[in-house]
Length: 275
Ligand code: ADP
Image 1: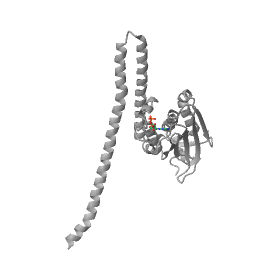
Image 2 (image 1 turned 60 degrees about the horizontal axis):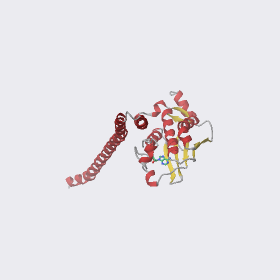
Image 3 (image 1 turned 180 degrees about the vertical axis):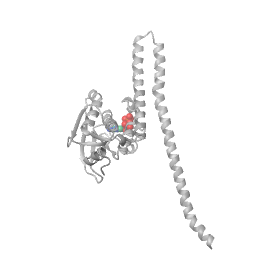
Image 4 (image 1 turned 120 degrees about the vertical axis):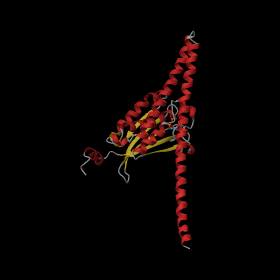
């Protein structure tokens, strides 16, 4: 009788343990698969421009008596080299935002400076498509508590995408405001475009590394498929979030919500042993 009672008590415990182990293994397998996919994707993305460069350099050598062809091939080599450089740069950025704690160098970062920097970065691309950029804020003293470089990279990526995925003569708006939230005030920055939009199915995946709705279009604009993965990481590591609203053919709005650099937070940083 006793032995039976004991084994009856152990059995449910035991099966729960087995279930936990199985779940752990499944999670470990999933992480391993994601890592393997990532390496495969990186390899593939590197292979394309490197292969093109190799073919083009052969073409240049073969065309040495045709200066016009040499010019043409050299121009294409420059495009491939630029693509390679931006891919490597984005990989470095992604690895930084994944591995570094951004809040180690946290400081109050002025929103108007972040916005001006992002607009500057896209001025040329917007200009060639006659896209109007309009930035506005409900107040000129908004600041975010965070890592300046990472915040600039995140907002820059959103504005860059807005320009890249919009047709000519449209408008890109950047609007910043303070919103109150239970854990303290947040700064909300919304980037709105009148571009191609994103389907509901794709909305769930665009923040994944290397996911692109239209790979050819992304490549044509110098995209790497890593931009939104970087934005998502930066938002999360700053205790914030990034969300998307979009209507196909109408446009999209990407919204960053990040902790405000409040008075208390700034003081806490300057006098860490006050409390
Ligand atoms: P990419 O380098 O391809 O732009 P991202 O990670 O920044 O990579 O974005 C992933 C994909 O999400 C893009 O390839 C594009 O299909 C889609 N996307 C991002 N931003 C927008 C936008 N503002 N409008 C429409 N589609 C977008």
